[in-house]
Length: 561
Image 1 (cartoon, rainbow, N blue to C red):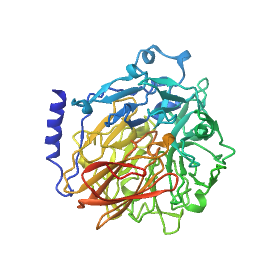
Image 2 (spheres, rainbow, N blue to C red):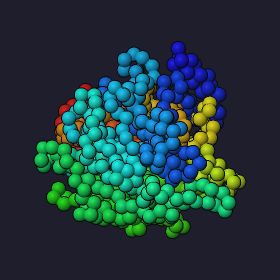
Image 3 (cartoon, rainbow, N blue to C red):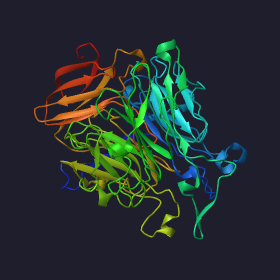
Image 4 (cartoon, rainbow, N blue to C red):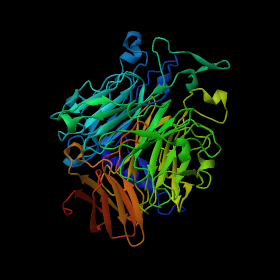
């Protein structure tokens, strides 16, 4: 009954969408109706321990392979550890939570199956990555924590701690990718700062006690693991950070993996807090993994004013529909979200934030999660950003800013963005301290929905109820590599009579989050499309005249089903 009432609210809420938005864009909060009861525990009780304000991630995944997307929420706890835990925090549920979709069973919403699947995790949680890293046909979870990280391997619908890749530092963004294109999935994990629970620091702005600035803490190195599964026949993740020259030190939060220069391998882009960002060009061969940091040369280290910003989240997509990947980075208040458009020269970008109309709209909010996705199915990528300050008393320091902030939705009209935030209804435009965000078509109605996490609060599931005559396809891939069966690292070209679109299937992106292993493409008025898949190891294959408004599973070497 609750789900039916929630559906009624959805329909009524979307009837009032402003007419000037065409198509009629509408997102509605269906969290309660969907059965999601997760509550993030930050551990904050006035001591201002630095990790408390950063929030935690979320992942879309098909945990049991039934074809419907489930949700995994990462939780916090007490940043000072159990030895100094307070009873109030100890008594709260600080476990990560796994919610299984009931839609595939003819039901409604989601069901908490955490304990059944042994998916609680441990530690003060931050980020999450999802992949079948051991190639047993079941998806696994990698969790970054305020040390140590945890790789949970799934076996027969149970998760088990592998004790691999248990880096003890403050981990943030993470992603699986086949760095050397040998057929198995390697792991990238970035780290933030050196936080000592025994000496947490206390900071003030004048007479106001609040959270510290990042400059108070030393930056950490990031880490790159190579998977030896193809070589040895068993899962083993070996630290190759220094050998691969993935060795710059920064206060890293956001991580994006993408083939930015379209040469077939994946680059790594790292958003740093209060320091210049890193772009690692992949110069690897089958026998040698090697990266070259080229942020300065590519125009992605600084903004147009030559300034380093406080990067939080990052996403990749072809914003200007020219066939090449672009970058969007969310930053601190009064820094804007920064849009880097790739020029005609491979791996050369320009800051197009002002030209794209984002400068004014994104100047005051502090952005974290960020998603490039096609809201209205017209073929270009729109933008969602999750907002919330890191200083709980910021309004006492700057009267124009607040800790809780309204999230942003920006609609792409031929390369220029317009504010569509009023389409988030009925209560989602209400300010909260938001952090992670991820998109997925969880209800399989053809448009992309949103999940957004909030510090010390419940998440919000935003169902896309946009009214449009445009069409779409979704694609999952089956590669010939058992160790990368989902085809992570593939590039898709989707062509219609009027559109030529490029999408990539990658891990990572946004802030501390994981998207499902499928590609969603809005195709405007097209009834049929041609799709070319460039597989991770370089082969290309084309499927012609695929009907739109349906899902396609493309199997390497076979005709479409």
